[in-house]
Length: 174
Image (cartoon, rainbow, N blue to C red):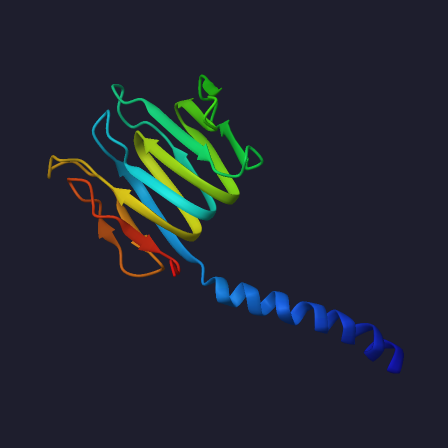
């Protein structure tokens, strides 16, 4: 029994500061469900220190699905995407300013464990982000068109605004 206590004590001593740091981080969440905006307008413009992932599935034949992720991690960020449900194609391009673009239809994407700026265009936009960050959201200008909804930090759901929102915060920004 003493051996077990001697083995566990150093582990507890190491884990306590890590747990305290994790609690101080005060991560928040952003969730967007079935978002949609006019063709050339980003549904979501997100800056996150944490992880974001999502799915874009065009519900309109004249809509182009596009996700642009700018990596502020000196190119070491975990960025990726994959097609779903036998979608036709997914094109990935990377520019010299650490921006990776995914263009296609019906695809999933991720930007994990880092700091990123992300622009998401299309319809059927679903996003989940955890960490700290800011976001500007926009839905459809036509009140008769479904444009999706969002929630910040687990609070009430709201319809996406018909014009770009003010800069919204999630998680601790201080």
